[in-house]
Amino acid sequence: MMLKLSCRTAITLVAVVVTASGVAQTAPGTLLQGATVVDGTGERAFVGDVLVVDGLIAAVGPTGSLEVPAGVVIESLEGLVLAPGFVDIHNHSTDRLAGDPTARTQIAQGVTTIVVGADGGSPWPIAGYLDDLDRMGLSISVATLVGHGTVRHAAMGDDYKRPATAAEVADMAQRVERGMHEGAFGLSSGLEYDPGFYSETDELIELARIAAEQGGFYMSHIRDEEEGVLDAVAEAIQIGGATGIPVQISHVKAGNAAVWGKSVDILKLITAARAQGIDVLADQYPYTAWQSSLSIVVRSRKFQDPEEVHEGIAAVGGGNRLQIIGYEDDRSVNGMRLDEVAASWDMTEVEAYMHMMAQGGSGVIGHTMNEDDVDRFMASEFVMTASDGGVGSAHPRGAGAFARILGHYVRERGVVSLERAIQRGTSMPAARLGLDDRGVIQAGRRADLVAFDPTTVHARSTFRYSLRQAEGVHRTWVNGVVVWADDQATNASPGGALRRATR
Ligand SMILES: [Zn+2]
Image (tube, rainbow, N blue to C red; front, side):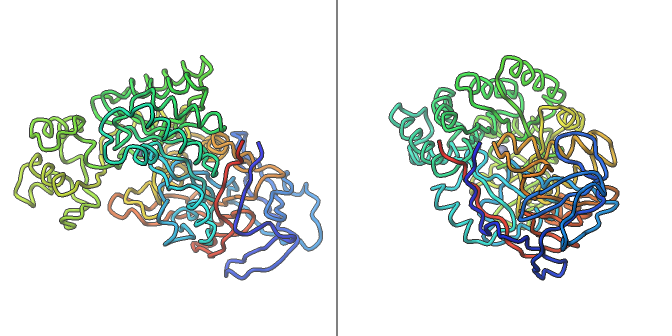
């Protein structure tokens, strides 16, 4: 498929090489020599050379096999792995890029393309947002989805706690179409959040049909990730079956102790749907804790009903599994678990919860998943990596998801092979997006690349210090330009907005 890519730095006649000190030079190209090349396809690694010219990969081959034009800059990457840059299909850097156009914590992990507008909440209007991105001088490339919640709120205003009328659905459909025309890559939903929570499946089918007609995909934070998770997965599959749209289940998980082990059944549903020709895939972040708003703990949404609140806290395994973040009314409690907050306020956990909800609610990190489920999803061929974080994330996944896979799941625990770990962060999401110009190290593709030390790469971000940048990434290139070198951003701006070609 053809893509109209509007990058801030247009491809120039000669490649621009930015040295470690950030000094730009012109050269007829760069030969990245002697790296262990993991090309993103899942094929076995090989020791090879990659020639980069004019922002593109010009040639790839075993070391010493390429014809190298005179004047090419040679950079030895011996001992390092060279992979395609990571494509993060679920990223929340939306508004934070303006304050950090280099996206330091992202490029420090080798992330080169991100997709915002997940969970039903997107920038609006899409065209204005993308134009703004192009003025920021971004180091990375950014795509967006159009959010179901965003168009639902626009169509229904504050009167959204009910099914939409036919006229309102038609209004939403028009907005989805507009968003797709303005360059969005698909439709996202967040059915555990306002206002998506109140939508019926038929409404989603109507809107998914519009996105499908425009060549987009449907990415959903499904209705329930706990006791109702199988029904919620089935609903996402139903939307795919009814419209033919490719379906992406966001941050797939068995969300609390009541459903531990259900990863088996979730994967069975996905496998069965795929056998019927429904193109459903999922993504995950490599952690056993999720991040959301405190409201989702009480499924009935009766936040001031002590019985319901008690039940909700019990269902996640107790207040010590809920870590409060972003609570505005009393910032001293941020980082504490709910049981600690309760103790500091001299309240019960139920009272502390009700108080926080009455004061406008809070963010929360829920330490409620099981490592076996995370491992099982990771080993599945139908699950890719996405951070669900981004610049400034309060969850360590924002600064760590891609590095943690390489350090913890590949090197330390061997849950996936290196080749597979790279594939699930590069060619899989790129294919899902229809971005056929990246995600694989192959002649003709964009030179979005990362070189890292496989013996040391690791995430340093923690639940206490979520912004610590990853270590072990030697270089990150976007469109052939070095954006990360020797633990520093170069401040080069070869990135910008990606706009899907309209039909
Ligand atoms: Zn989500």
